[in-house]
Length: 295
Length: 240
Image (tube, rainbow over the protein chains, first blue to last red):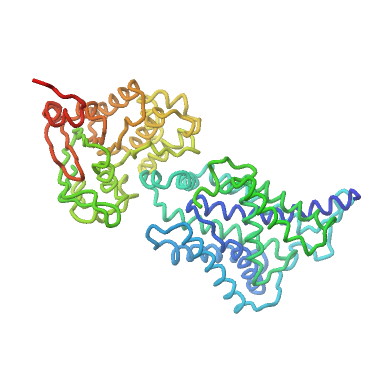
């Protein structure tokens, strides 16, 4: 393999990997405050892309993306308020099944609104054939947008969780919900907030990646599976580990094309998921006590 | 300060508390003692709103707690230190304390800092460990942290659930000293304990709970001298 090819694969892997990481972080934020896996997470990514594409002619690219993120956040909040919040002592399994139902509902609604065809945002800079050359490999500037946006989101999220008082409240809620209530934290609002955050980062990821991967109504399912694999791989609830695991899965997938046919690419994530669940159910970076304790 | 009338509470169809009535006056330490399963923790959880009362009423500072959601309670001046400490393990000691004081955050950063300082004076070990994760503390330190966290809310009533469980006798002594000091600061304390002797020694009054009913109540000194209490909870049988 030449160096150029190597770097080409590497960047492709990092691009997909950062999207997986963002989806996995979305899983983790909600898992931490509620203990559930929100299987509608992939739909947030799809919605972000779709809404921005619809708003593009009206608002222009930057505003369309902002509006798409805001609308998806509101959608996330509404999902939680309408379907999760009013449940009295809901079981984890029951909530997970609800999110699976919601993801199907969202997907079908998207099919009716946007149809079966594939849409995509224009490239932010230049077009499909614009490229920058890095060490001999030709990389689309959009790749840098994706990596940059995802990197910024990770940094902003960690600053938010570590330094702001709302972030501290959310961490407290994740660590011990009863004690958080006793400290005067409205844990239900924290759950709504976690749905909004997850929806927001998912939507933004959906926007920046749309020019490369295109957006279709059924994009969400695949992303949810990949993101879930990454979340488990990193250790459920550990967002920083999700970044590492996401990049790892993305890079493995990208390089696999060199060895096995492209059609098997999706099988890699699933095999990895099975493998990790058998061998290290607490994830690569997770401690044994964390992860999947609620199941 | 706190009045409980005909309280009934439990889990689902199981009724744990049966017609409990009690009151706590301002500035006193009231101990609730009883064996395992007597309903002590259920009682505290019901007052804190974690369990919804099935009937009866709880009035705190002239307010019916039946309509108050549990996260509003610290804002009213009533906090609970739950059984088993329940500190935020992945957060630092200081973050734990700040979270305890979040319901008084409106007073400003300076007020929070001075309260933080006050807790560090009360529990010097917490100052040494301030940047450590709470989960790395020993049991006794975690209990102190849980109490410090509760005190950060500047409560008028503080409810402690089994603060001595699983701690070495020396640490228990220290904890009880702090509880007595809380009263001297003008706080009201509701203390639930299995360690009846230690609890009644510092308390002003006490209630004895058995299978969800109050079977005895009175001044702590009377309860300490009571033959039945001695036999059942102090592990001592005098033969005269």
